[in-house]
Every structure is written in structure tokens, then in C-alpha cells.
Image (cartoon, rainbow, N blue to C red; front, side, top):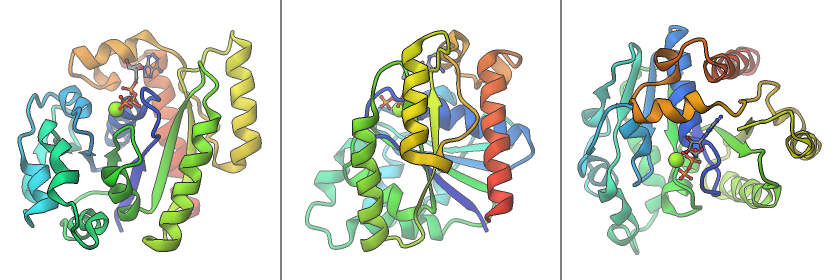
Length: 255
Ligand SMILES: Nc1ncnc2c1ncn2[C@@H]1O[C@H](COP(=O)(O)OP(=O)(O)OP(=O)(O)O)[C@@H](O)[C@H]1O
Ligand SMILES: [Mg+2]
């Protein structure tokens, strides 16, 4: 069965897209067939994968019964394919206003995909609106990246409540299965404090692997390359490979 993982945090700039793209690339590097779905109208993940304008395809998949599988494009990274986004997607709330069960459409589209991939990863926008709720209704696992350079755990409680509500009302299989510390600067007390309170609050869900602050990750975006090819031996590359390994181990133990 395909693994389905939403990367979500309603806070902007938490590291969702950086994690979505580079975790996907690392899983692909390890031989997994990965489909990355860019569900953010800002389309940053698409641009990172070299797609400038994803057009209205994804909007139509959510509003007009178009097939998600038809929207899949290859990327330069072997094993990594993409469903690109574009600013068109920002119209989804209006287009689906009043539609019964709108938040379950993506789940249907996902279920209709051919079983060609080992992992489907969804990069969510920074809001708890229809797109994020649709993603959470469609997947089994949520990974929450947390930026540790600022104290941001208050927002996490809200996300965790949302996950609970969606589990009760829409998707009993949903698990907040991973919390990932991003932009960690271990020389700073704050980062260590944030990490500690993350572990207190979310326990086992917090991944042992952390992603250090690494300028190469920020640069890779403008070169439209994942860290695995932009600077394969960088800290960023090392860290996201460790994240990929840890997730694969968890999935093996709890499929
Ligand atoms: N480990 C890191 N080291 C250095 N910079 C990072 C790291 N992770 C993310 N960044 C930078 O932080 C900014 C926000 O990251 P990113 O776009 O991944 O967050 P996001 O949660 O997807 O944001 P949004 O909410 O806008 O979608 C970007 O400029 C990115 O380059
Ligand atoms: Mg993003």
C-alpha cells in the first residue's frame, strides 16, 4: 500500500516545503518511488522541482472531476514525480463554497491514483483552510516541521486539535506521526529549549533526527535542485537523509 504523508503546520515559514522537497528527494535516492503533491497556491515546491507554472490542473482535479494521475510530471530527480501547483489553486475555496463534502474530494482523487508510488507526500499551505483539511482527510500520516529558532509551540497545540477533530469526523486512520525540528542551531539555548519542550509535549512523535540551519538548503531552492544534487555532502543533505531513514524504519515497524 502507498504511504501517504501530509507535511503540515499552519505557521508560515516552518520548513514545510524544504522538508517536502528534500525528504522526497532523499526517499527517491534510497530507491523509493515518490510522488510529491504541491497543495500550496504559492507553488514553492513546484518551482523547486523546476516547474514554473503548474496551470489550473490541480484546481480542476478538486472542482471538475479531473484525474490527479494526468497531472503528474517527472522531475530531474530520478524516482521523484510531482503534481505541480499554481496560484489558480487559491480559487479553490470560492469554487467549492457550499459543496457538500468538499474536504473529501482530494481523498477520492488520491484513492483513484494508480499504485505506482511507494510514498505520496503532500506539501500543505500555511493555513488550516480547505486545502490543509483536504490533505489531512486524505492521508494516514502527518509530519509537522517546527522551526526551532523561535518559540512556536503554541500553534502546534492548535494543529494537534485539528488533527484530532479530523480523525473523529473525517479520517479515523489519521496519525500525527512525526514532529521534526527544523532550522536547529544547537549553539543557541533557545533551540535546545524548544527541542526539549517539543519532546515533553509530543513524546515519541518527535523524530530523533533534526534538521540543522544550513544555508545550502536555502540556496538549493533558487537552483531548482534538491539538496541531494545541489550539495550532496552538506549538513542539509545529511540531515534529510537521516529523516528519511528514521521514517522508513518507523514505517517498517508500524506499516
Ligand atoms: N534547515 C534550514 N536551514 C536554513 N534555511 C532554511 C531551513 N529550512 C528552511 N529554511 C528557509 O526558511 C524559509 C521557510 O522555509 P519553507 O519555505 O520550507 O517553509 P514553509 O513552511 O514551507 O513556508 P510556507 O508556510 O510559506 O509554505 C525559506 O526561506 C527556507 O529557505
Ligand atoms: Mg511552503
